[in-house]
Length: 246
Image 1 (cartoon, rainbow, N blue to C red):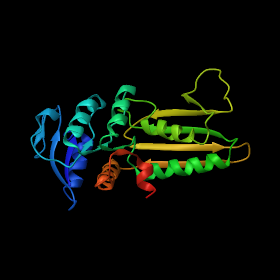
Image 2 (tube, rainbow, N blue to C red):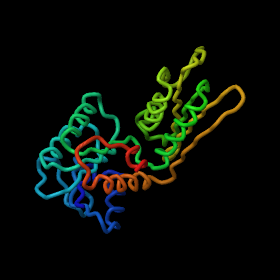
Image 3 (cartoon, rainbow, N blue to C red):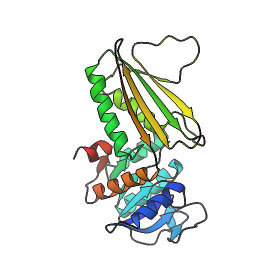
Image 4 (tube, rainbow, N blue to C red):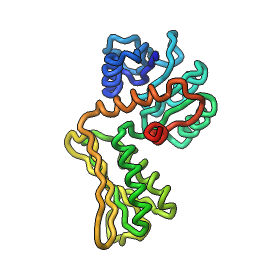
């Protein structure tokens, strides 16, 4: 498969490009980046400049490029693997509507471990219906958004088995915990790649489900799995759930 990497000059774009170069089934044909190209791969400043054939676009850039990227994929009738987070409601709508025309894989975290943690947390939460649920996420001190997109995804998934849950982003002041609260606490320090912990507690016991990322290459590895998963897929909206449950 011929791969186009959007955000190829960024940290994750370079990691992904390097890992694909070691995969016999994939080839990075070109990239898109607003920044100066310091790779040996052909790089375009915008999607409108691209003049080579590709089979799939993998996005590790910035959500502001969503419409430009989606329009390109629709025009070329190729699949998208979106690994960028922070999309606005309008941008999410663009992605969803585009999936009626082309195949799109969208995830806030490409770790197979995180996908497994989410499935496990849902199972535990459904069995302990009255338990308190808290989420704690830790990342490096350069991360801009809080809470993390992954923590929000975990909370959103838990609301599938706790439809009356009330999402609380951080806790301060004299506020009593309400029964249906799911609170996300964010920690920023050092060079932590990512730690997500789900705490599910009754009055007499607590179950802790924790995932810790040691190397950012795991996200590129997940993106490569998604690329291969999308090969030959019909139009539609695909997520990590679809990939881990095949």
